[in-house]
Amino acid sequence: MVLNMAWLAAAVLAHTATAKSPRQRSWKPAPPLHDPSTPSNPSSEPLSVVRVPLLYQDPLTMDDEHPQPKAMAASRAALSRKYSAILAQNDLAETSRSKLINALNAGYYASISVGTPPLQFYVNADTGSADLWITGSKCVACTTMNKALNAELSSTYSILDANAKPRNLTYGTGSVVGIPSKETISWSQTTISVTNQPFLLVTNQDAAMKQALVGFGDGVMGLAYQDGLDPSRRHDTLIYQLIAQKKISVPIFSMWLNQSSMPVISQRKKFDEYGGQILFGGVDPKLYTGSFTFFPVIPISLPNKSGGTTQVMFYWTVPMQGVSKVGGNIISPPKDSAMFMDSGTSLITMDSASVQALVISLGVPNAVLDEEIDMYVIPCAQARLLPDIVFHIGTNGTAFPLSSADYIVATGDKCVLAIQVLDPSAHNGRVFWIMGGPFMRRYYSLYDLQNGQVGLARASNGLVPGDGVALTKDALTSSTAAYPKYSSACCYAFGGVWWWRGVAVLLFLLVSM
Image (cartoon, rainbow, N blue to C red):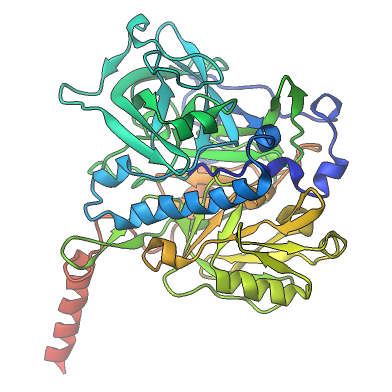
C-alpha cells in the first residue's frame, strides 16, 4: 500500500544530521550480481540473489503544492479508505484483488524494463499491494516521470485474455483505469526476464492521480503475500511469476531501505540512487547485522456473504504482543489486531488508545495531538531526549527497538511522533498496526512465500557494511517447525474445515465420557 506522506522520509532526525551525501559515502552497496545459469545452491551454502536497486524519491519535492499538514491529513484518509475497502469485500476469492485502495505518492522505486524491445520504467515497490501497473501511451494527459508504454510497438504484449475488460483501481489519492494485459518484464542489471507477467496497462488517470504522480514514477509493483504459493488462488505479483517460471531458485525476496538516503536536488526532482535494494531470491549479509528472526504470516478474519468470517492471507501480517518504551510495560493492542509490513507506507500507524498510552509512558507532558493530522506534536527539545520504543513481535514478543531518531520527525519548527492514529472505526472495527518507513529502514526484511514467514534483522546504516550471518535454505525451513499451519482456504467461521474438525473432536470427547 503506497502512502501519501509528502514530507516524511527526508526529515528523520539524527541520521540525517550525520549522513553523508551519496558521493561522500565511505561504502556503497555491492554492484548487481546474478548468474542465471548457476544451479541452485546446496542448503549449506549462502543463497544467490537477483539484485534490483531502489531509487529513493524525496517526498519533500511536492511541499510547495502539498503543504505538510494537508499531506499528513490526506495520508490518514487514504489509509482508512484502503483498509476499509478490503474489509468491506464480501467475496474475497477474486474481487478483492482489483479493489485494493492505496495512496500513491513518494517512496522507493525500482527500475524495470517492460516489453520487447524493453523500455525502462520506475515503479513503486510496495509490499502492501499485489498489482503491477504501468501508464500506457494512449492514456490522455497522464502524468509520468519517464515514458509511457506503447503496446503496439512491443512484440511480446498481449491482453490478459479474450474476455478482459477495462479494470478500475481506486487509490487513496485518485484512481486509474486500464486494460488487463500480459508482457515481458526484465532488468537492465541482469539477463533475467519474466514472460506473460499480468499487469494493468493504464489508459486513464483521474485529476487527483495526475496531481499525485507528478515526478513520482510510472506505476506500482505490488509484492503482497497474496496466498503465498497456493496454486488454487489468484496471483498477480511479479515475485510469484519469478518463482513460477523458475527464474530464482529460492521463493523469497528481501528489502533494504537505506537509513542514510540523501536525495540530490536537481530541477525539482530529488532522487537518491542509493535509496535501497530489493533482492529477489535471497539476501545480502552486507545489508544487515546478526541473523534473522522469523515470524509466521497469519490470516486476518473478514466478514463473508454467509454471515460468518473468512480467513484471508493477503498481507505480510505477523503476530504481535504490543509496544512499550524501553524497559516499560507492554501496551497491548485491542483484540484481533493485525500488524502488517508495508514498504509503501511512510509512517507507523496504531490505534488511538495505544498511541496515547505510549505517549504517556514516554513522559512528555507537553505532547499535543494535532487532530488535523492525528499525530502527536512534541517540543523538539524534549523529542531528542526521548528513550527508545520497542515493538514486541511474535507470540514470544521478540523486541525490535526504535530510537527517537527513528520515530521522531522534524517538520519545520515542530517535532512529530511518526506514529499516526488509525482507529478501527475506519475499517469495520479492526485495528491495524502498519510498520512503514520508520520501522523498515531500521530492520532489513525478508519475505518467504514458500514457508509463509517474514524475517527481520538489524539493517546496516548505508555508511558501513553489515556483517550479517549468511542465510541458508536450512535456516528458512528450520524456523517453521513451531508455526501453526495457516491457509486462506483453511478457516471459515461456522463452516470451515477447522471449525468442523473442532466440532468433531468435541463430540468424540463427549461420547467417550
